[in-house]
Image 1: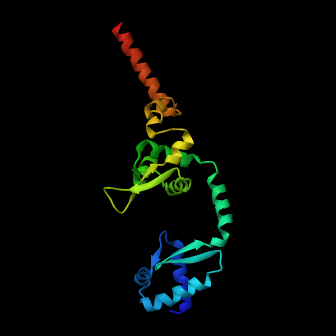
Image 2 (image 1 turned 90 degrees about the horizontal axis):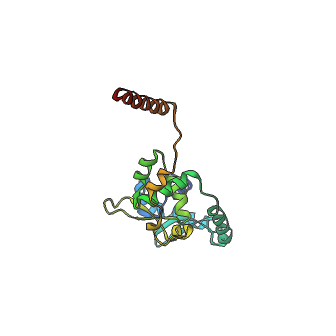
Length: 198
């Protein structure tokens, strides 16, 4: 494999990885020796040092990052993104976390019936929720609300949240034709029973 192809593959892996990668990770993934990986990594670090996206080398752990020279513009962009209004889906996920915390991603998705990755990521970025260790599974995380969440709602504790049952009883769900038919049948039944007893 030419070194240019190897460098390109390493760059792609760094791009899709959610965590820093070590030389041994690349060796395992690409079935290469450290002697083959290191020169390609070093060249990639040098090639990108003046780019908008650089390769960080933190004690042998490599990760793509934005160039510190552009940090002001990146912060402004991220702050503007964080100020955007929460979507209905994100509010739904936040509500589930608030009332069922600490809760796993799998449990959230079981309740909602849809993938919640984007909403969780958005809430993490906004600092409204945080990850915490899962005592029953070291490979996964649980989600809980943050102090910032309480500040946004003007609460001093999650105990100050309105009782879930009281919130639900105020929500009138739309009635389907089947529900209407069942309700009518129940009322007719009750009326018939009343006539019989008379």
